[in-house]
Image 1: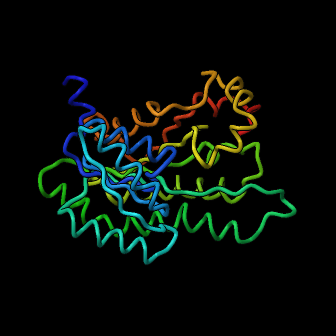
Image 2: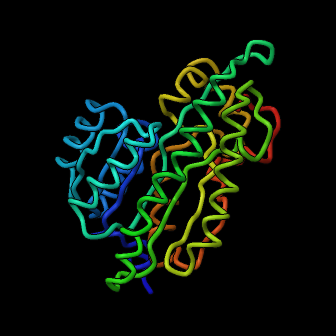
Length: 264
């Protein structure tokens, strides 16, 4: 029961959505660095291909691009179909694709709720629903419990300081949906959520460009998230050490949830 066996993902087949940049790229890089075969999918084809090229040069695992606009039902179906052509099974699904929207209460557009609830919640369900058969095949092949990791947010737990109404609502919904899925997919598949605090990503770029020092200083850990913070959590939930963990929302947030004065 050494540490390497508890976090081992070597040879596992992984799909990371939104894996072309930001937190998704961090997660994909962590799996590749530990010997997994990783597929990344996002709307930005160029970003996916550039990330794959970079990660394949680093190894020892491998990375393949499956570009798709995952806000669209048909595109989710296409990814499921394409992955099924390439692989007989899937061990780990990381639902990371998402969007945010900030505006004042008086001007907050109705379209923001449509966009965010669709991508951040509904299409997570669509893709998960479509990939359950491939995840189940890995279990039937004797490869152990399959894993689903959804990337949520502390904004789905605490009220954010910024006016991101649709985003916080969508992440709270994702957390609850993850628990619901966990109750129905066990014992073959675990479903867990990482409630992330501030990380360097495209979604957080504008906020961090303006407030990074203020945000970091308000946190008990005095910094924003690093790649190893989210990668470590994903490897734990993907390996033998996380096999009995399901239906949880795990804060990866530097202590964000215990402070109230950060602009998060």
